[in-house]
Length: 242
Image (cartoon, rainbow, N blue to C red; front, side):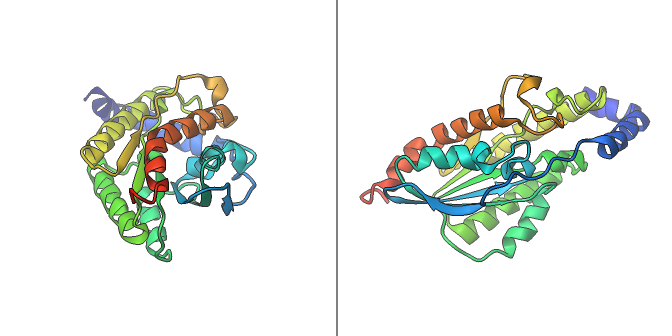
């Protein structure tokens, strides 16, 4: 694995670049808007969005432009959607485990999960992250009894303009490795849906900080998630199939 060798050889440069990025990066606020509510008409569908700053919608000005807004608008066309966002900027997978364990146990039909980027940037080893992610899924299943768990893959970090080279290339290679491992972890799990984060590397669609999605990417992401669960939603909305 060439990037691992490069990480060792170029460690002083990579460490300097990483520190510099953290010190100089533009800090974007979470979008305004409610993180829980009810909308739409039809059979009841309970939606929970879990994750980090992207799940929280950082890079947009309002939750209507974020993943929540795009999923809620589509699902509300056919269902009464009870929606909750439990996402925190900077959260790693372990941070989310700790937070979710403190949540009240309740039923959600669909849970959307987006985590992993902060594990990469904080140098969590892949093997450790997979253990954490497996634990996270167990917590979600025990706490929320979801019918469908929709897991978004790791974005293509080699295209994040905030990151200078060679840091961008090394981080991008690690992101690709995490994404492949996550896909394998979820393989053959009947109630899981994996969402490929294979958006075109168009810098103009990213947020001003060069790290988070912009509104257009959130719209594409929301569309991907909805398409992945559309058939499941129809099934869950039919009382004869539940």
